[in-house]
Length: 338
Image (cartoon, rainbow, N blue to C red; front, side, top):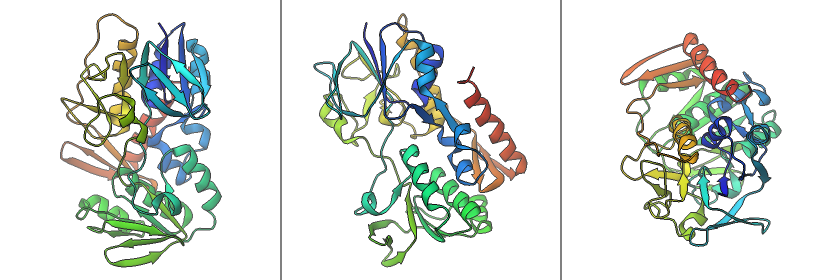
């Protein structure tokens, strides 16, 4: 059986760690995977780059899996064929997609803003820019946007404006943003990013040294043309076994997939659990069902070594919460380095 793993995300890292397969290939743009949960800590200066990366090349070698560095350009589900950007074609009997998502964009954002994903590109450009930015705009006030805004304000001593299309943040988050000197613009959707760069939002235009785009998740454009069933947005629709509902020889996990009967947020919290189920189902035999957890512990870093902890309506904050998050993150990364 020819197994093709497309993408080097959280779930495929778990598969490679726990899996041995004689005829398998991993296709990923980078020889390493960046753990998203530690990116704000890297921006804030708490981690070195090597501390938040998983060596996918080493994992693949230990698993006996062939590694191909490249990007997927198209998938033909009917022919069971993946095509890479360099023209390489790869046939498969079973495929697994862990390709992530791309930022949902506004006019000009792709050209004039720095997208938070893929993290490898983002961090390279951040390292080039961090010592010369004094005014930064962050678009998108989800967990990633809030954490990145506070990390940038803390590390670069920059004035940061955070744009949100939602009402005001919870009181703990709002207080943490204020404490870090981050200006929150609630109910202010960004309509465009212009050269400069400048942000157009709420009838105003504001110029920045750098605009970071973290807003929303959009599917890879070629997924709709693949022949795989997708949801209304274009993400691969999967059943509780994490298989395509139209092509059961294709699995899809992480941000590129939507669970048909129990859709959930596109977050690393769920992607990690996807990996545990996926590893078992790719081994063959009786397939295991995935059920998204109803509640998840959220630990939101606040620039300094300080965090907010939230669990099912309960919340607290302090340096102890950051140490708790740090231990969890380091332990997860360490699991791939044995």
